[in-house]
Image (cartoon, rainbow, N blue to C red; front, side, top):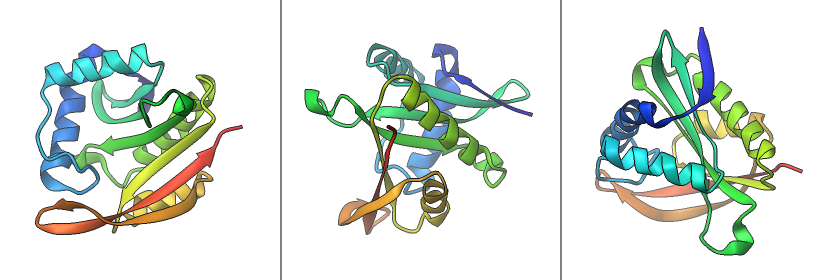
Length: 164
């Protein structure tokens, strides 16, 4: 059974491993350099400071996925807006974990008083786009060829959900 809970510093190594797999093998993130466990500990601490939730999905004591609300912009007027991100370990994809995490991170955003959530989804990721649509996110645009990964320029779909 999958349990969703707030992330803590002891989860940093699994979060790094899951994220690094996405960096090395996918286009869900435009990061191109792997992150260390130490960097993920700092990242988690910054989220606590900024009151931005990070959740993990755990199965049989192992973190298999994580979701985070990330600062959209350092400009003060954007403080009630956050960007959604979530990543599922490749061995656990297709089992509904991403959907559960997305639902829970939206609720977590509401609970900390956010007004707006945005997602940037790389072209071709129809599973993520559909998941966002089912949870009430709207398409607000496409940024054409804004990133280049694995030798290809990629479009990014923008989606948004107002929470109140």
